[in-house]
Amino acid sequence: MRSSLIAIAVAISACTTASATSSISFEADGYLLDVTVGDDSRPSIAALSFGMPGGKQSVVIPMRHIKVEAFDTQQKVLLLRFINPGDSTLPKDFILSVRNDAGVLTIDGKSSSGRFSWGV
Image 1: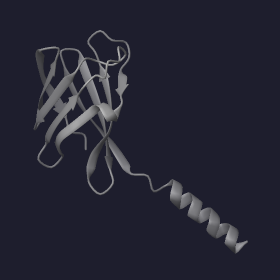
Image 2: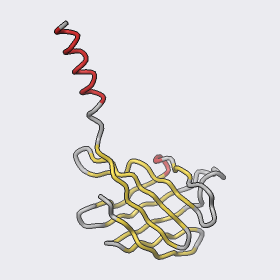
Image 3: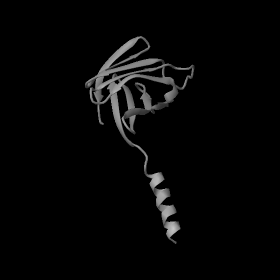
Image 4: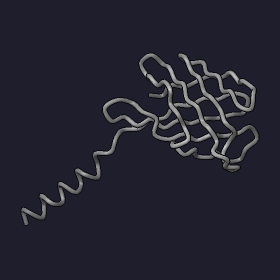
């Protein structure tokens, strides 16, 4: 009985040690980027969804196509690039640059300035 309880406690512990997550976001000109932040030893970008103006649903962008050049939640700095691998279900290449609560999304040669929410 005791060994069964220990095994159950270990299994529960293994399942509940997942990292805490939070969400940060950018909105401008109908674009919406939701960024999921994971927090192991320091915050890191875990997922990104992208909504287009007039779009009905956001698309989750595979992290392997995103290059995070700068991400600091204390300094409130974020710079990331997405390069579309030729997938028509994903948005065109874009760059998101954020400093403090202001962000600029550059996509298809156009820049959209908007507000960035640091919900971490």
